[in-house]
Image (cartoon, rainbow, N blue to C red; front, side):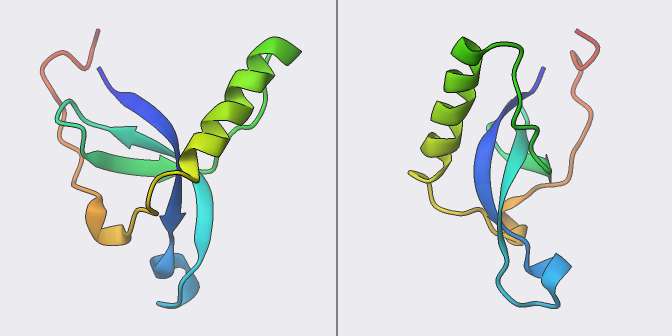
Length: 82
């Protein structure tokens, strides 16, 4: 099982080594370590849950940006099929 949230990620690797901050969906392993990120989907099925999405985006700005070195290599965990 994995968890995810929105986070700001400094994508230096994608910007020739220069700072480039992006809002991303970040996936975490069981230990809470970030293992990957992707462009966010900022949509929802209704306006009420869209407010939840917006709150999650605001929460991302309260946390420090993740750097490339913060991400650990993904290793399949025993209950990944759940």
